[in-house]
Length: 103
Image: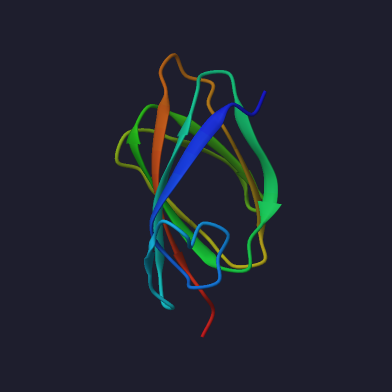
């Protein structure tokens, strides 16, 4: 399944979550919580995304292979590169992310 929720604290003025977020054209900051046994399907974003695991465990599948991430592990996914994320662990995954547009 894909059971998850996300929140944006800082977002681009034209982004999908811009309504409730602080507007900033240079960076977006948010958090996604992914429940055990669930995943986020592969998606190529138009921005570079840095992800930091705050709680739980994650498996990231992308063009460079598969990476297991634990608490305080981080990874950067370049703009235009597809990546999928799954939570195979026993607890909720709390993932802090920062998006930076190209340029």
